[in-house]
Length: 200
Image 1 (cartoon, helix red, strand yellow):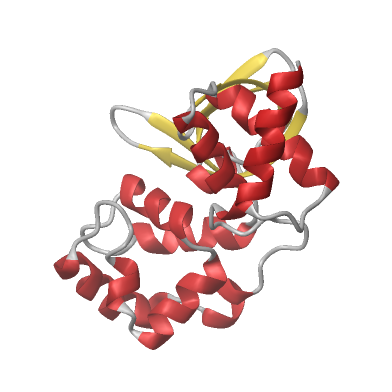
Image 2 (cartoon, helix red, strand yellow):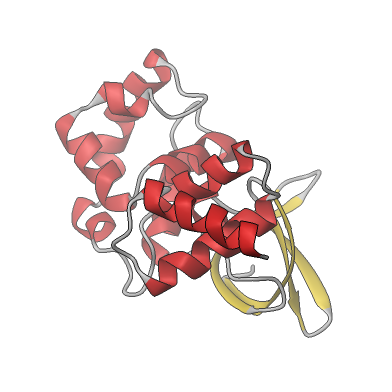
């Protein structure tokens, strides 16, 4: 089983698919949207924690930025009615710590905001996860890992795409601006992105 992958990012397909080259072998990996929006530029190195799912008809790799993300994904898969797609949607919507709070508070409305999860599934998830989640571990996000919520960068990228930017271009320009100043609001990042694009 594959536990982690470190190599060169050579291809991306929004919103969740990428290929990482490791010594001449390209690994196709599915990731939460939150991880996708924080990818480095193509041909740059990347390290992902992997969940390797083996089925009769497929062998699928799921990539995460931290062990806590992978732990939450694996725990979600144990819930009746929650498949890999729904588990990825949860991790695309909230961080491990946020999910821990939602379960502790029995906040069903927050869970139903996740695409593909209705009220009945949310209620079942609340009941089953209450006994399965190690809340203290899920709250400890691995050092250096990014939160799972899309946040400022994700919102800015989505806005630029709606304005006609290609996904790769939008992500690269937003990441560059965000690295230089992480205190900027979404509107300021969009304005600076449009200004830079206009000057090229």
